[in-house]
Length: 508
Image (cartoon, rainbow, N blue to C red; front, side, top):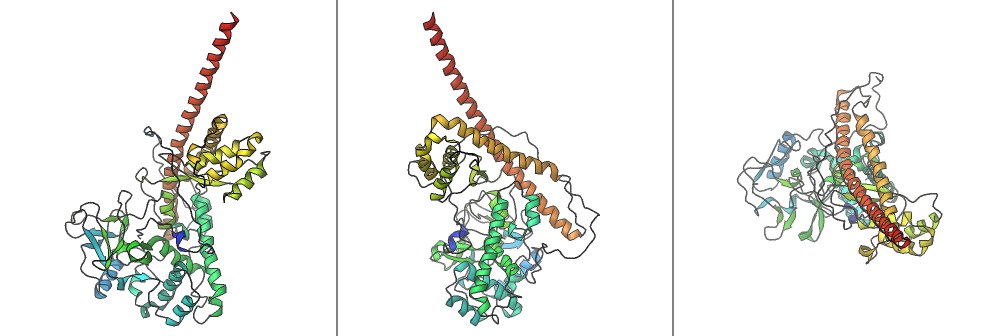
């Protein structure tokens, strides 16, 4: 499980694709250091219900994909390593082994220096949009329709996987996870049960919907016209969830290879570390995919790579893991803000938002270090009174990050109300997290199969870890907002006292 690109997957598809949904990052307001938290980690106790004994497979169970491996074991990865060596992979400075972080990973087999180029994979062992299809006729049909890289690669993976040993990629596909834990594979019931408090749930539902929509588009335009090449029992929404899940977690962009997107076998055994800043790229001098170590490694030490500057929620969404609380400097939580339905200017404000591509509710990322300026602009718009209707356009434009002057956007007369609105939104969100974390200790999993119990318990723990880290960020924002409101109100009180003192002086 590895991906070494900080680029958004949504940039790979044209705007007409269901998977195109660009999310921009905004500058943040800086906060001073946060005082040490007194909150202790929540201990999870899982229980199993004895009330349900049926063994019938639910329609919401994870799909039964017939290829890939159920467990990311060292053994099947070692088989992959042997096949890669036989297929032209030169001797490496790392080897696959069982590791503490991740089921398996790449560890240094010798002393490695900082700045040393590690891991060499020749282009012949890289899967890209130019890869040769074993089923050449199917490949020609896909290219004839000018299918973008992501749907093309997703279909390619399914086609090669279905051919099993007849595909040259059989050994690679056999080492891929059959049912990973990324949110693309969670059922709707699991998303609703475990991630109700987090906005990443909406991202997961949106992603699943977009993947299914992309499949339906391919089915109606291409597959239905060539059923002998793309039979529905092989090319369907469940297999596309699998193939897109592999792409979301493993596809990399190689800037020095004309920005080509590719799957790089062997390299995708590298695990992520939030403190690592090195990425994969194509090295023109050695003519292979490499990455440069950003620190020295000792023999037997696990070597890490960066999957990009992603929040814990984004890492769970694509990769199925959550870093330890407080270890991810890129962590953030999405805070949803909404217009008030009883606002006398609701329609005018909504029109202003829509004009700049925004909606209600609208989510904004909040970090430990601050929140985006766009969030404050949106809050100004929400609380602005009718007599500020001429400023609605300016506020909406600033909230959309389309204004060149949004850094200077200030409305002192409504600043207190805007900050209070953000605080109320934070506290509403905090209460949802706190309720889930309180109830999670006694949540009834209602599972009889030990295998399913392990899955449910693991998903639940991931949700607890995510909720704990996201609530921590909201607590930080709550602290700052309360302090700023206190300062504003104490300043107003001082001004009132000074005014009263002057008035009393002239009365004497």
